[in-house]
Image 1 (cartoon, rainbow, N blue to C red):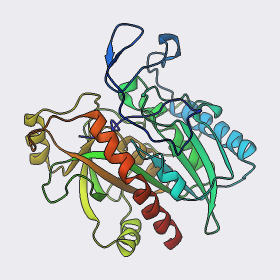
Image 2 (cartoon, rainbow, N blue to C red):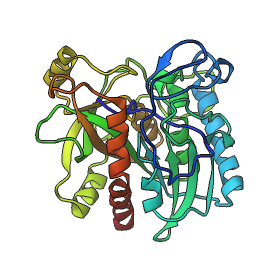
Image 3 (tube, one colour):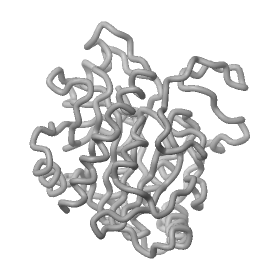
Length: 325
């Protein structure tokens, strides 16, 4: 599979155009072996994944959107882009930022602890639209709650974004969607057992948690994407919890359930975006064939490498889609 999202960030001071190379296996400070690289001190890790209530989640997002406007000097953003594993350089293809900042500049947004992703956000202008780009994301497998995982998307919506473009790295269950291919997410399977939505009867009037997900992944935006690149496959994406990859038996199960791609991100974010009425486009980069489909073992380093190699193309595709909206 992929996108542990195929997982995420690193030092917020890392230049966005730096080449991200696979790092050797190292022993972390608490004795664990991490193939993605070192992690931070335990006291900087998320505190138990405690979830926010809906009232707290939407209130924190509104506060963060106010902070975003003050930091970027931009009162309203139009489109949000979330970049997945290895895809930081895609942001450069969208154009020069008017400002860039560490993720944890915004209220409620810690930086991710997976060392192979950048951890920042950018504001830029593209064809007269104001774009908010998140380089990296938070994951359930890092110990964050669903509400924390979707917090960047809620910030974007509160900042005015009516379109959210989610990218990820994925493992393909289809031989006709090979490693290196770009695909559109047409539907999903939420196999995390979690949701970012919950009813909060004690709170103020909030968006309903009973969200219709028939068109969770916007047909209109997929038509726009196909107008830009007619070769894009449409796929059903399954999100699992991770961080471990799947077994061949699990891949056979996922195929029976109708999955074409599998990864560790994006679905919860799409649900949160739909709750507040944003249109969602999912662009997935296939970084490997799923377990049991190839002779080679699934390697985090190889997954990251595919993302790095294809990031500029992902950025160009997203840029053309935005300009066509």
